Image (cartoon, rainbow, N blue to C red; front, side, top):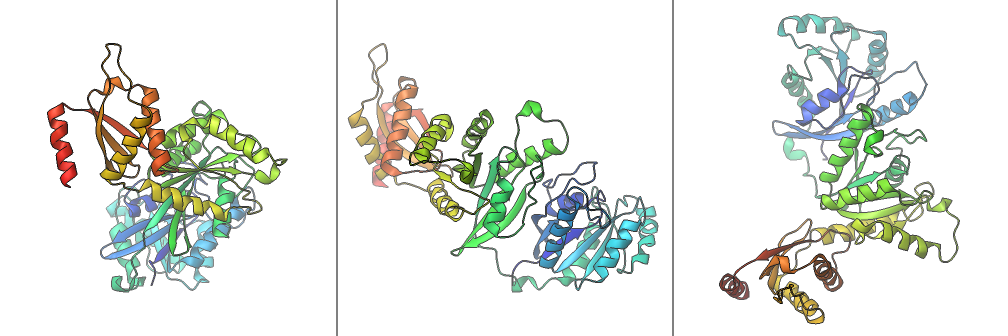
Length: 453
């Protein structure tokens, strides 16, 4: 049996995302004093006691209004409930029972799932029960007074929730996942790409810039492999971003890069590589994440037999920070080559986690130095590389022990990296080379130990 899923629903601005952050134990959902912050459904892993489960944060439900994104938000909430084994209905104890709460409560009574009624914003232990008492009228069982901000009553809420879960020993452990963040400027097709991967309307797609605000997680399985796809808000230039929903969304996008194994950097084929794309490339490289460059909207480009080769060279020349990343041309709208993206993800994820033995590394190093000797300083002293070894992966990091790191200029360091990639691969992943100086006696002693190993 798979991990239980719990949908959190309610009208706008009652504190659903605050409760999600409380249950997940970290501030991962965007919280702001403005209705409609959450639009898509976002999944977060939680646990209580011996139980592990997933909560789904949803947008605020409004039944009597079909303007802007509200019908799409309802559709996302309905899908979340269809996947869940229980529902937490969040209401605002400070505002009291409203007509919108009545409508949602009536709709939930028609569902075949257990519903827990969480009366939020009941910070006071004395008045909390009085505030919650009004919500008995909804006919959804005992209202539980709680506070998503301070944590009051969340233990009681979770105690009731886990009663609807299977026994922990009946839940199968989650298999290993490859975390894939989908990053790019606004309106390059990130959410359309996520929907193309999943085969459903997982994320709201709109020509309105800034439709996606939070980081949206979705698990996809293929060939016995699991991928956690993370759709993110479009990242604009910092000077154009005001404090508010977009600011929080961009921060979540940067955190998505940090927690990913592979980043899909999505570029608009019509616009080409922009200055902002170049900055994002630098950020991905700095974070040490494997990367695949996805050129979307390829169906909208007029092409001849040379177009794809010319475009590839243009991307490579302008994406200097990611010259190691493979490039794939797709159309999220038509589905053209979308399935091949995960093939590339498999390759770069494997290279990102790859470890190479010291013997093989030093064979490649000897080959490189035989073709191009280390440079000499102005005083005539030549640089010397004694040996190298890999010290970590994800990204691969290699330490080169030398007589004096300052005798190796940037050009020679780039040459060594290029030779390592040529001989050993490392496609799609950054390669960290660390140049360490040691005296001759320490080098010989370390080299002897490495030989014995």
